[in-house]
Amino acid sequence: MKKLLLTTALMLATTPAFAKEYTIKEVTDYNAEKQNFFSPDKLTIQPGDTVNFVNAQDEMHDVMFVNVPKGVNEMIMSPMMEKKGDKFSYTFNVPGTYQFHCHPHEALGMKGTIIVGKASKPGETKAVDHHEMGEMSETMEDHDHNSHEHGEHRH
Image (cartoon, rainbow, N blue to C red; front, top):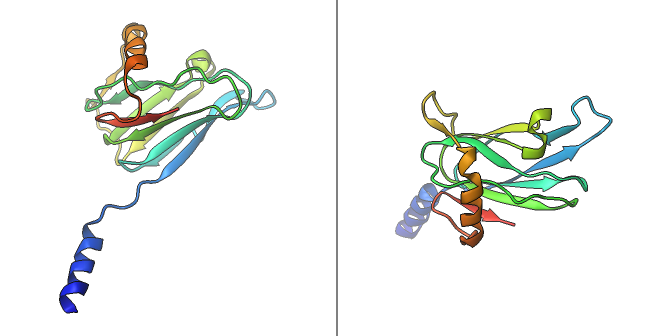
């Protein structure tokens, strides 16, 4: 009996915490001071957690990550979401700071930051080359979006 209790206690102590899901809404509010924004625009999560980006209205939005930790070896971007309820999900496995924006509304300040685990230190992130985006998005269309080495996409 003691052996069973000890084994159970050890299993519970070494079992990782359950991954969580978070939602960031992509909002257009013509009555607000800032009309296009992510809500929340800053989020701190843990490795293995998933963030769902959800279009809150029938407006065109996307999610394009422009600065990511150096350990991320893939382009993270959503398709254009045009209808209320359209969703893009990504599971973050590499710790660090991720900066993103809505491409059509970037000039209007529609930007955000996700910190996975702890924030990246200077020099631990890399900018995403926008000139390669067209080529990479075509490659991603042919790619299996269900699981990746560093994250998981779900549409």
